[in-house]
Each structure stands twice: as C-alpha cells, then as structure tokens.
Image (cartoon, rainbow, N blue to C red; front, side, top):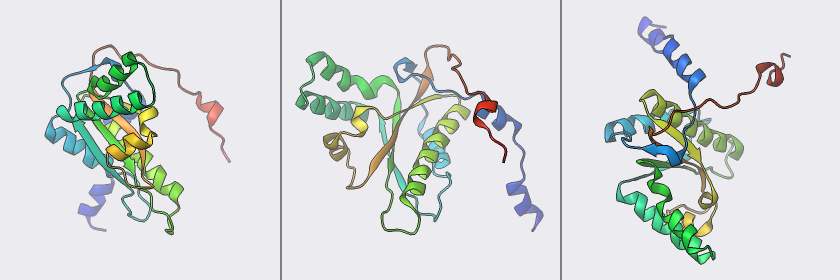
Amino acid sequence: MSSDKKAVFNHPAPEAMGLLLSRRSGSAKAMGKPGPSKKQLEQILEAGARAPDHGKLFPWRFIVFEGDGRKRAGDILAAAAKADGERDKQVEEERRRFTRAPVVVAVISAAREQHKIPVWEQELSAGAVCQNILIAATALGFVGNWLTEWYAYHPTVKQQLGLKPGERVAGFLYLGTPEDVLEERPRPEMKDIVRWF
C-alpha cells in the first residue's frame, strides 16, 4: 500500500471524537437563523451520503425544504390535517411546522425488495444517513433535530411530497441555530448496555 493510500485511512481526529461524545439534538421549536448556506448544505448532504451502504445501492434520497418550499410543504400538511378533521388551530400549527427551522431535509428510504441485500440492511443505511447529517451539521456549528411525527406516515402527505410506492420517510431533519442553551439529557450507563462475550 502506498503512503498516499495509507494516509486516507489513517488520520486520527480527536476533535471528531469530542464532537461525537458531546453531540445532542436541539428542539425544532427552538431553532432560528442562520441555517446552513448552500455550500454548507451540500457538504452536509455529501456527508450523509457517505453512510455505510452494503451493496452500494444508495437506498435513500433527499428532499430539501428551504425558503418558500417550507411553506408549500406546510400547506400540504395543513390540507391533510384539515381533511382528517383537525381543528382550525391545529391545522394552522401544521401549516407552520416546516418553518420552525431554516432548513428541513427529508431522508427518504428507498429500499429495494427482492434484492440479495436484505431490506432491513438498506433501511439501517437510511438511518445511518440521518445520523451522518446530524453530525455534519453539528460539525459546522448548527443544531439538528431528527423527527418523523404523523406526517411521515400519512399517505396523502407522502404522495404530495413525491414519494414512490414502497418509499418511506426515515426522518425529517430540522437544521438551524439553537435559540436556547442545549441541555444534556440522560444517557445510558455503559455497564448496563455492554456485554463482553
């Protein structure tokens, strides 16, 4: 192996470890501007796409909501909520939902059935994409919140957002700047979740 190739795989990154050990989500309800710039968002999505992917299937894709696209998505949510009989107050809350953060990225799981790579592994890859996006956003100084909520599963919303049959929302990732101090949450004790075999 040449020294150039070795350098690609052997690059300790203590700062990355610090980020992983301190990363936490921020509430979408407490996000403000700025959000990632176009260049930063491209980097975040590229980092997301570097997730483990058995078979190199790329069993996921992205829908980005920013600017007026967030309002158009909110109109879809509001219409679905109204059709489902929600009260006017809730309908208007749904209309504003995507405007809570400057940018929302939907990670769409597009797992292939009848393939030698199990669907479960393809779905796990979409989850890894979501985590990579959160880590990349944090590395660039932003905060993220991985949500699904009702609209990720609503057939009308999925159809209006352009999901194809069999596709599922792995997550809506809200990205922005925290307006409140991020408080630590309880974490598991390693002794309770680790078994050495």
